[in-house]
Length: 110
Image 1 (spheres, rainbow, N blue to C red):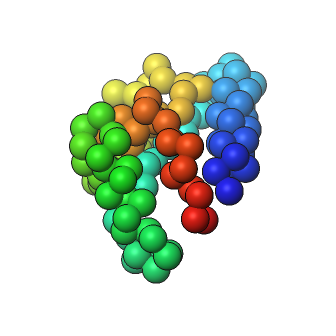
Image 2: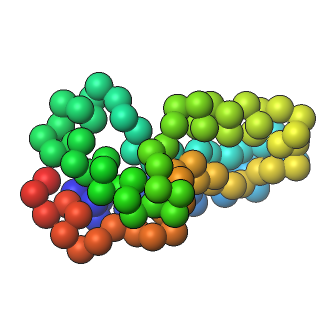
Image 3: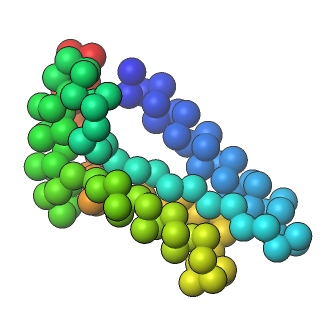
């Protein structure tokens, strides 16, 4: 259910911000990565998974799938000194899909 997933994601985003605020004085950074759908074995096993991935790719700003390398690179940046001033952020690594949103019928058969 995409509504439930949206509420859960909003909760994680809020928890990231609150934890960053609470832990900031101790110089502890708290960030999250919101990864888009990736071509994985588990996605391939879901009924209609490949079609949903193709739909998402077509709707994303960059017209591509989220790559595992892109997610890993973002994590490395956040963990490195280059990301030392970043805290309380949710970094979307999804080829721009989060800016578009889901069409009303995207999860109709789920």
